[in-house]
Image (cartoon, rainbow, N blue to C red; front, side, top):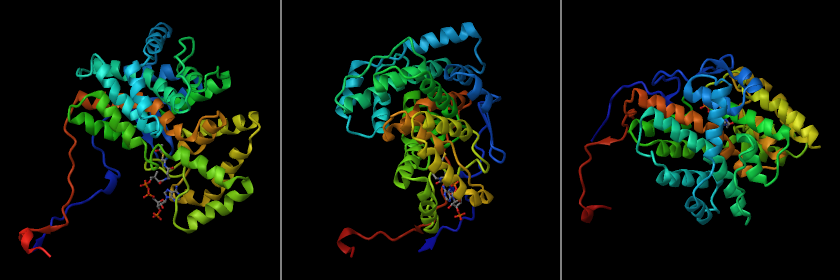
Length: 381
Ligand code: ACO
């Protein structure tokens, strides 16, 4: 019996591998810089709305007033989901919100008139319809599983405000709407992260956008990717009081564990998105009379300071969970909120993949036995 002897360089996790070019998103992880289509994330988070950012990502330009009004009007008009999709969601309502979102997006493909059209214009139109409908899915599912009637979309509210309205069945405050809007902006796109890469791999086989977005949702769900916000808040709840944070974190680290919300494959400096959520976690905590969550997180940051020498800083998920929690959002919906923000990013990645498509099909270096003599079943031990 021989073994394979190929000597090849293996880059596990495709770490540091460039597989294509992109003009959507620039990240310099060494200094914590993030640009969408050339625009600094800080300027977008401070000055734009999610609707403007979606237009920027999918059409390559910040819209003027007239363009934004028409674009926003279309997004608002596309929010409804078919009753038959609601029926499917009702059947699977006991599943995790991400599983229900994945199922509902999959089901929506049967109702999209352009499902088979993979032209760039159709991909963008479908991506926008999914962007508009996904909040309705997440909010309706939460109500169905609580035995409540889904709340119809409210066309007088913007994307973020309407999501909170449908979820909670009451008008959100201006402050809450703004925080959710910023949160969606921060999550909208992030280069070839695991879920966008999964969507690209799917698209590279020339499948349709809905299938690629389903792959993105499935991949985002894991705790190493989108699931960290939920884990961070669970950790904060377990810690309970700021004075317990240090011993809690030390216990994890001393046992070789990971403190959730820290570390990133690309950022070896602070994730630039975290800044905007940190300030809001602080102020929202004070205004809701629950400052302890921010205090616990701030204490954890202090304990983790020595790890900065290894390039481990807070990531976007670290403060996000506390914000959602303070807005009364159930913790298993935190990842779904990430997905709602990221649908434009997945759409953009799929459109880019299609623009100059090549099947994505890497190799694994075989390290098992070779040419094993076959044993008939009667002679096997
Ligand atoms: N806490 C403590 N140590 C950590 C952490 C952490 N959160 N993250 C990484 N490290 C350490 C690792 O133990 C490893 O140490 P070693 O070299 O001594 O073995 C070193 O840093 C490198 O870690 P890797 O896992 O090799 O780095 P990778 O780039 O593969 O991982 C990841 C990135 C998965 C995000 C990791 O940092 C992690 O698990 N973080 C916690 C989960 C999390 O917050 N995920 C959200 C990511 S952001 C997003 O998707 C939106």
